[in-house]
Length: 380
Image: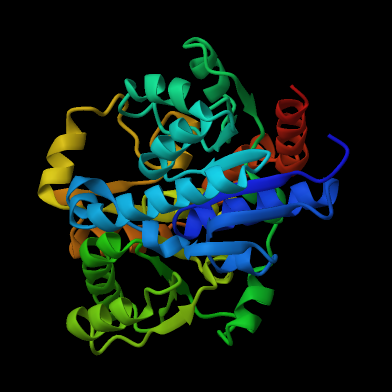
């Protein structure tokens, strides 16, 4: 295709918005006049993306949260599908948000629109049966991790390893001092970043123990400084949690700025998800936290295929960093593990070396590889 394609695109939540914006940036380098429309957040909007709905509408997690928002989600998906079928983009790219995107992709694909899914769902971690849904939904899957294409191809799903766009964007040796200057943090004080997630349900379940852990850490180490980046639309919820669970804690609440927070910090208490990979790319020691509604946990627990949930541990196939999940995710345990990193610089240095190896493995010009794959799909 010589002329610029028209792209339909759905990016759910803050992490999907970031991935999609990096992808779009790369595609525009190939096709400067490329047009893209669908569902996106502030990172996509900054690139002139035509957002028919904001990405935070898809910020739900687990069965309970999805059920509570099901009516609105189904309505958005139906209206979006109608509009895409009317406008018929050259290709549709669903970025993550598999529960929303797969149904939409199936509908578009059946109508003859080419579909690409960017970010392979964690079939290697849980729900391996989902590979059948992927096969029905996507003409092609763009995979972030090197072991994923072979898994998909075994089941007849065309896939390409494109690396992780964040590995291209984040410097191999980010400057802590520059980030601290941007956040007006002192150069020498130990800094802890709190990242409770970008979904409403994550903030409801994970922000309380993280804030309580920060209070416990501060009690033991009064010199600690704390920063908490708020995902789009989540600041009011975080302010409420702060007042309820750690009212006396001195805390710098940021609007966005997760990358500055990670670059500036000495350790992070972080919700499992894309942010754990970001922390690894910034070479920061972390304590991984996750809590969810008990019913979601019960449903997911029996489907786990491996002992790790955080991406740095999955990539290493070992526990490089502690994971405190569900009942183990207590303020006391989070504080203890966070302080343990601060008290062991040698362990932090060894961890940083492992994270450097992961960074170099994932850094392979994702935008170029993804653009090549999409160009091939458009040519057939």
